[in-house]
Length: 122
Image (cartoon, rainbow, N blue to C red; front, side, top):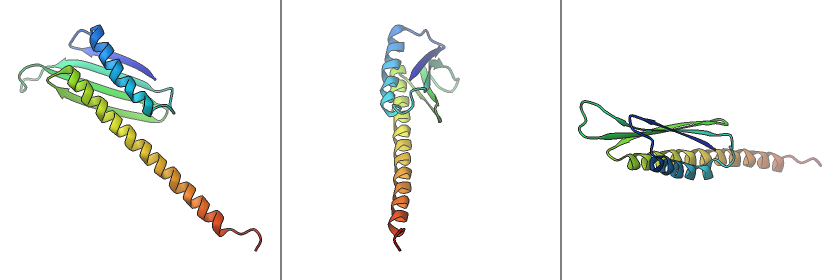
C-alpha cells in the first residue's frame, strides 16, 4: 500500500506526517489481498465564516484493485480528525470484507446443494 500525504493551509510537519502514516498504515491489514492500493491522505486547516476558531479537516481516499473509498471529517483538533477518518474507513473495509465473504459462502452453498442433488449413477 502506498501512502501519499498532502497538507492544505498548514505546514506538513514530520510529526503530522508520521502520525497520519501510522494511523493509515493500520488499514493495511484489511487490504492484504490488494497490494496495489494507493491511499491519498489530505490534512489541512479550513476557514469558514460560520465556524469560529480553528477547524481542521482530514480526508482519506483509497483507490486501486477495485476499491474506491473516501472519507472526510472536520474537528477542532487535527489528530482527532485523522483518528475519526481512519475509524470510518476501517469500518467500511470491514463491512465490504464481510459482504464479500458472505457472497462467497452463499455461492459455495449453492454449488454444494447442486452437487448433492446430482447423482451420476441414476
